[in-house]
Image 1: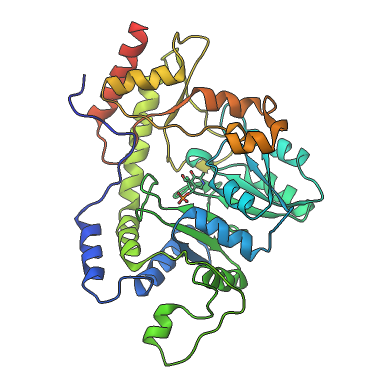
Image 2 (image 1 turned 90 degrees about the vertical axis):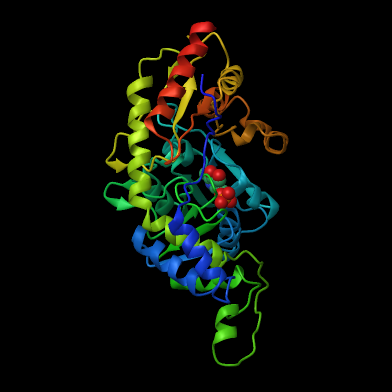
Length: 384
Ligand SMILES: Cc1ncc(COP(=O)(O)O)c(C=O)c1O
């Protein structure tokens, strides 16, 4: 057994990020300013988008986006139930209605046909999730959104470095939202980004993220004297230059980070594909590049003599940490109470919700760490 605990995730921070942060700390300007502009520009270039607008989190980016797009009471947005609940929470807090659909059981990606059936006259948007770093079938969703005059929003929280065909996720006409939470492929500790080709949307988002002001604080501070005005009240959800400095360091290291994630994923696949108690998610069949955000397995209830929670606990006792992505949103108390119609009717999401485990997966892991996880898994199943 390992003598030290292997966490499920750990950010990869090197001397480069520390040096960049120090530079900002010593510069005299530590909140939103020139480093944010540099980070936004570099991120837009990375994903082939015309513009990128940063936020304090992907959740606050969703909030600003819904507000900018004019969504409000009674408006419906369709989401997969197998996702992180915050983009649905935000809508609920704006008195909107979260509509949930099932995923494909093999690939864990949102189902186009299920989405089509859920469209009503109140539907305003579809939020697709590029789950675990694989892309959803964007063409199918694009056709659907266009036909019904809906906005397509890509939840790309897991999809830094993901490609659909040979297009970067984030390069589409429609907005995409990325996350830089500490467990994501690149991090700013907390942070989010909207990418878009729409300059009017950019102006609205920048104003919403900073009180509804018509000019950035940095521009007011450094530029020619002038007043400020608010035509529409906003919030305060800007990212800081300190965080942008971390992000710029991470972007410089992205290729190396992704190469290691891909290497670890292949090691896991090689060593786990014949473990009969586990089911591995399948790759989608259309051309893509996997962003390898998570490495998940499903505990097969037919062959394993233990359930998912016991499996996680057994691994923890062997010094192996795990994650859980995700509990189907329609099974969470608030959503179950407000939308009882979904329980029992989104069977694939419920199955994944009951059987999924995310194994340790971060770029500073090495081959021995993967070996330790695989040995611990073998030991758990041998003894149960
Ligand atoms: C699919 C998905 N969407 C949105 C979010 C929200 O991101 P953030 O924590 O940056 O608000 C997450 C975070 O884990 C996520 O996994």
